[in-house]
Image (cartoon, rainbow, N blue to C red):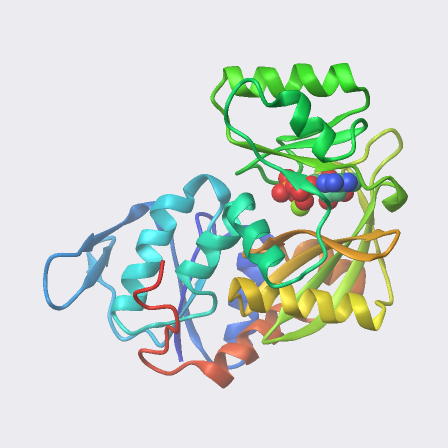
Length: 301
Ligand code: ADP
Ligand code: MG
């Protein structure tokens, strides 16, 4: 197969591993720097150009779209979809997962366990909003934050009120969430490929930190999931429509609560913690499913 990898940097661990895994299975890959593509969207034959070439004959595309390039990256991916190229994750599914509010609403509708979450716009709802999530301590999250940036723990009511008011003043979109204390600064990253959890790790935040992101100094270890956790992760990925997903779960008092679903989950932490060939499994999943014009969410919002 001829596989395009949409990534801004071919030296990134995840990108390198995907190239390696595809190579070793006899596929041809090309890393396409998302922001350097340009597209012909007017013609009846949609096309993408890159470094003077017209990108033709690709069987599959693996989107590794960073949060900062979501808008343009999704447009490039849509263009691939219009050209009939099979996407490892579809643009619509990525869009759903990138917007934390939209993702939460979809997951809630499907009955997936979530921390109590509130969202508001007008400046005079702060008190009611804090009450809705059970008061302090509470977590405040920017809607498009990632890697733990933009997630704040307000330990007191006053702190919560100040942060919420400050975010409103900046016209930032954010949600307010119950702080799941019993998680103890740990969360579980479930790696889902093709409707199955293929690997999972527990991430523990460093001392004095509640965010367990590896980018924030968290440490990873292997973990055995309960059947409920496994089913929750699979369902969350399915609701988002993602073939490849990193579902983050915390252990709440009454069971698993989904924090977020990542559409370009990093491979480094999970491969190192679990010693599994996740990149290989992603390529295998593409081998199984790639057919021309297979985008299921075509024309959907
Ligand atoms: P990001 O997209 O920045 O990773 P997350 O929603 O995943 O944002 O939050 C980052 C980390 O903060 C999580 O991995 C988790 O450890 C911690 N965290 C987030 N929300 C909560 C919460 N409601 N209760 C307890 N811990 C949380
Ligand atoms: Mg996260």
